[in-house]
Image 1 (tube, rainbow, N blue to C red):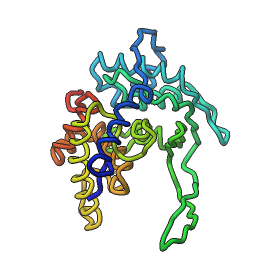
Image 2: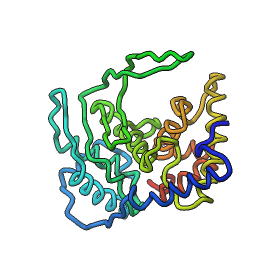
Image 3: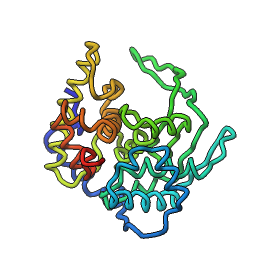
Image 4: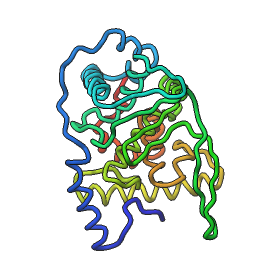
Length: 273
């Protein structure tokens, strides 16, 4: 069985202590402000992102203020001729900040820049087999780096916002990686508050991840996209997408996992309109 916090005995205790102690610097505390949110930006969200319209008023207000902070703090720049418009800014910031509602913290301080490409792109992936390492060109939609850089393809970021029921959202996926990587490790275990929470996280996620891998290998249909069976880090990001976009089915099929993510994100999407 794959473990989400790797180690044994005293090593696990030490690793968890490091994670807990690092939480203050990795996830800065943030105060929700009350600045005016541009009416035209609100219109963009209402027309292009169904989840925004389903949020209760109090959570929608939080999201707007978090989005303003995101746009202030994080550089959003286009490459390959893509001009950054208000549409790109607000849709990127708001989808990312959905993960921060009720958290009272922000993304790690090391997150400084989001690079937006017009569409999917080719990247080089290193593969090792039998002691031999080779390079492979792959098509990617986005990437999240531990140094605080996020890369997104705009066509997929935009279509992911509009289709809010398929369990796939590129922005949510990549920024979930940033939460996972806040302590410097992409291991599928974000920063939590106690050893007890880490123990529960490890127990639930390890079991369901192993079961997901088996079902994918057998060709069974799963509520969690099969990409989540790649490794624990992808599992965390894919389950996050499923939690926000297919909450009914995730709770029905994987109630213990739903409860775990509800506890972590401090929201229950099933209560939204």
